[in-house]
Length: 547
Image 1: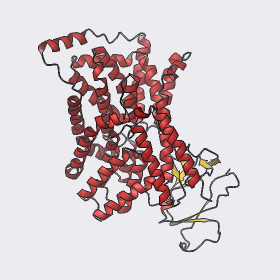
Image 2 (image 1 turned 120 degrees about the horizontal axis):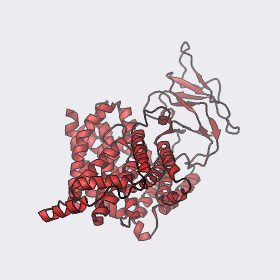
Image 3 (image 1 turned 90 degrees about the vertical axis):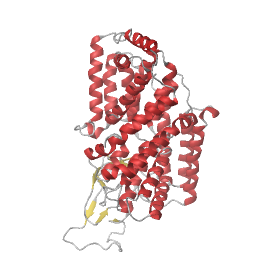
């Protein structure tokens, strides 16, 4: 009987089991089918949530039928411990009984002789976990990752696979932004920025592009896209430039993933790979900032050309633009000064709390999803008798799509699809050279991680690649780590499902009557992604080693 899944500290500890290759191929084909159907979203006249939901049902049934999914009880509320002994014995868990007490761990005392890993312990049911057993670890540590205490409960198999933190961030941020917008704060900011641009569309694009990168660096990408997207809609409608809205939103969606490269805490792949490679916050910023600056300017320039967003050329056009924006009154949308200032203070606190959530006591344990939901609740107090109208504005299709997608990826992990991706990359690297840091290795790893992260969740992919590099003995200064970081982030710009923020950008487009299908996004964004990835390859190969 396989061990139960332990949910603790945001990670799952699974018993290792081999999956026959025909089953892995079957699920890889299902993943391919999902991508094809999403690409033909308009042709089959189905919403993203329904497409992903149908595939989630098929994957879960297939996972159950083939035995790749386990149905053990879940242990929650446990504490992760990393013992240093070379061998740990875990008392057996009797699945016929509920686990009300802690998990008992017997360690070999330091003054005893080392245990013989080749022999069984006195207790035939006790589990011996040797130090070199890959199933004993959950991350990049050489020591064991075990969990103490906790309670065993029943839970549907697909529930642990859903990243509820992301769901909470999208749900809470959407509610917060919608409620805060009623104070006029976003229209006030939009009009201020618009007036500073003098009504020049190109200048406005650069202002909003820089704002997107900064917000994505200090907030999560989804929250940044929701806020900046709301401001963009207001500004362009005020200027009578609604025809440029699709271009602005697409460029901003692409820039969220570039901004996510700026700091160690800007994205989850940064945290996973950066901490495994022991890259400090300051070093991360120092090495990534030059690329972010160049990629931002190139993306804005390309976007202006691609969507015909230009400067006001003649004196008459400039005078007309200045005259137009001078007539804007940022206080028009402010109905209550007290609520406006309250929203302003709460917005600033929201941004600061999200930015420093990882270091704020207690909040760091609860996560950014808790922050988003908490601030949403604070804002909704103002509308306590009519909060139901804000619930109706939530994009339930987006939330449903993410939940179904997470369930699919969860099955893909169990079916060995993601592991096969990582194994394939490892074989390629080993075939190219046995030394880490080789330029060809770095280029292959960056392109490969970008390609795979465009169609799969980049978080488990980054975790697998970080583990592979650690096993290969890559040094902390190796450019291979940065290949994974750049690839995992930039791959989200190839398809709308490769990044939560680009999917949010497409959702905002649809909300305002702008149609952009899966295939349409790929067609519009592909050249941007290729240029960004090309610059990243040149940067990792030739610039990073000098920094």
